[in-house]
Image (cartoon, rainbow, N blue to C red; front, side):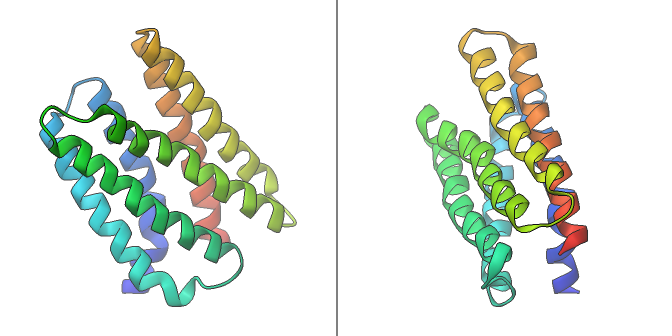
Length: 169
C-alpha cells in the first residue's frame, strides 16, 4: 500500500499544491494555513525521499529523487520564511520559484530519455518556465490576473507531466 501511495500521490498532490498556492495568492487562505501546508508538504517530501530511495537509484527516477531531495530543502525554506515574523520574502520566493524550476529540470531529463511522448515533458517544462516568468511579471507589476495565470500555467504543465510519468513509470 505504501508503494502504491508513492506512485499515485504525486499526480494528486501536484495539482492540489498549485491550486492551494493560487488560493493563497488570492488571499482565500491565510498565511498560517499556508505555513501548515508547507510543514505538511515538507514532511511528505522528506518521507517520500526516504522511502523511495531504494526504488529511485538509477535512470530518470534517480533524477526525480534528487529533485525531491532538493525540493525538500526548498520547501523548508518556505516553512522558515512563513514562520519568521515578519515573513521572509526571500525564503518564500526560493520556495515558490524553486518549485517552478525544479520540475522543469526533471521534465527535460525525462523527455530526452523517452522514445515516445516526449512532447508532454517539453510542454511541462515550458509550462513551468513560462508560467514562472508570467507570475514574476504579474507580481512585480501588480497584475494579479497575470500572476495567478502564471501559477495556473505552472500547475497545468506540472500536472500533465507528472500524470504521464506516473502512468509510464
